[in-house]
Amino acid sequence: MCSGRVDMAFVLRALEQGADGVVIGGCKLGECHYVTEGNYHALNTAHLLKKLLQRAGLNPDRLRVEWISSSEGVRFAQIMNDFAAQLREMGPRGEGEGLDEEELRSRLAEIRNLIPYIKIAKREKLALRFDAEEEYEDLYTTDEVEEIFTELPSYYIDPEKCQACMICLRKCPVQGIAGGKNLIHVIDQETCIKCGTCFEACPERFGAIRAISGEAVPTPIPEDERALVRAGKNTG
Ligand code: SF4
Ligand code: SF4
Image (cartoon, rainbow, N blue to C red; front, side, top):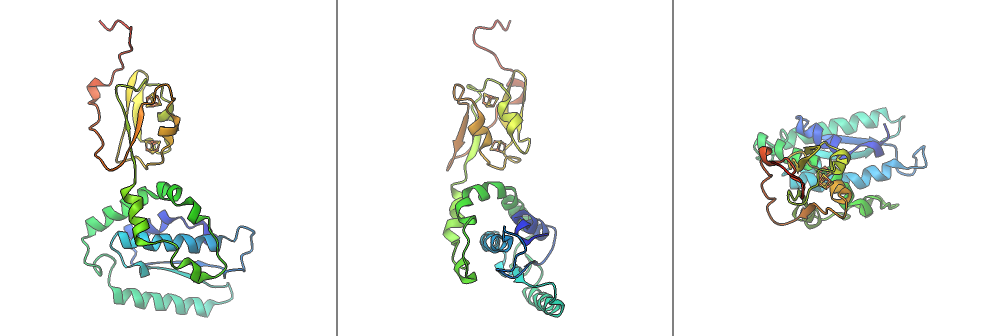
């Protein structure tokens, strides 16, 4: 698999499941067999990932990127041995950083869940490509990554405005919206990946979905109150 295909979620999942470190190995820069030159994308992504690992409380050196050609078996072995020794020194992931296992897993899962949103928020920078590897070093700052999380919007369906047209429910990529015919729709905040698709999809004449930042999302309407009462309809 091309190193450019290594999604941030793959690395986070490996760490969540107990890996103490991850190596992304790719062809040498400038030697990609394809026009896509995915290894530059892998390098860019890895720098963002390192900041995300830091935010989760992990040592960013638990992720390493190496360029190795297929004829460099000995070098590959040396790199892996060296990384294994480095990881032994750091200790098991989480434990080495003084983090509680459950807390660490939940932090990693939270970030993984938000990868689609993070990719949208950082799409312009993720598309940047530099010739020199050093130019990626300061591409992402800790403050900037923190900002992603503080500005992260939550989406909320106003029960007074929802017309149960089901458009948002059909478009949500993670089945994060509960609803049905003549039922006021509700977003499951745990499942939602903050992609904003529903916000864009809700017809303007209804305008039922709000993006909320910096304040708590209102409590969802109880299940037994979700039947839609249309204006002018006799409900008796
Ligand atoms: S923002 Fe809307 S469409 Fe996107 S995941 Fe959340 S509920 Fe689904
Ligand atoms: S698209 Fe808007 S009006 Fe239609 S079900 Fe979703 S929130 Fe309700």
